[in-house]
Image 1 (cartoon, rainbow, N blue to C red):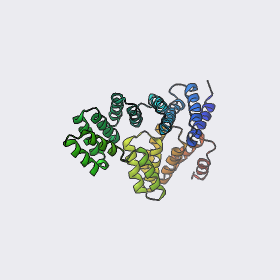
Image 2 (image 1 turned 90 degrees about the vertical axis):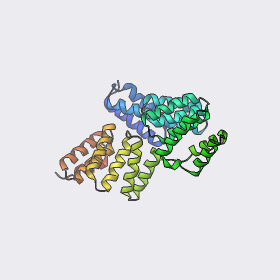
Image 3 (image 1 turned 45 degrees about the vertical axis):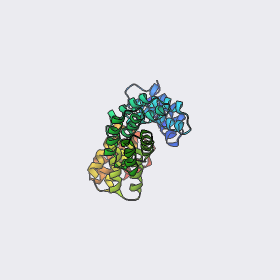
Image 4 (image 1 turned 135 degrees about the vertical axis):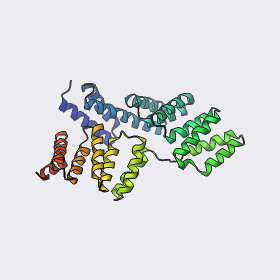
Length: 301
């Protein structure tokens, strides 16, 4: 069994590769950590999570170049690691639906909706698949739920599709529903990107709203919670910000940035001893962290 220090080093290297887009190198490092770390340890849990993330990104790459079989394999591996991420089930449904396996695709969409009943893209896709197999009543019901959840689907194209449906022109209605399904509705990555852009422009209130929307879709991303905390601090809500940093740390105990930010939030509230404790913890996690070292050195006694 590899020593803890070496495991942390391999995990850090995996993160470095992951951030650089060197996904197969990252996968090698994370799999080594997962194989060698004690079961249930923080290193094993985090490596387990990132193995799923790597497979999800590899699936996206494979789908982009038309290699659907590889995309499906990677998505199934990702789901095996992270079964409670609805977006993975949705992506798998998209891939296998393209292969004509509509019943299996519906099963994956139902899995996604069981995790997140308000997942508008999954609701709409389920509706189009029901329509494709001739189950029109369930199709319209699912599409209507998608529109209730995401009003961006409620366009003139929807009105035209319903008009075609009402006059029995199912082929045209399906074509229009499929076109409508391509609408760029909000998703986690969209909200996250908007939030970061607004934060960097100084629009902290707008950033808070975007991060809250992202977290409403999936609350398990530590990076979103960290950014959400930063935006809350920008609005002067330091106590709420600290809660977000602590939740990010709970999800990822090795998260140096969130640990430092938790210390900053404490310092903003005048809790200097607690701030110092967070900086010390961050420095223990990453002895090379210049920011943690400088904040600790300049922290009032």
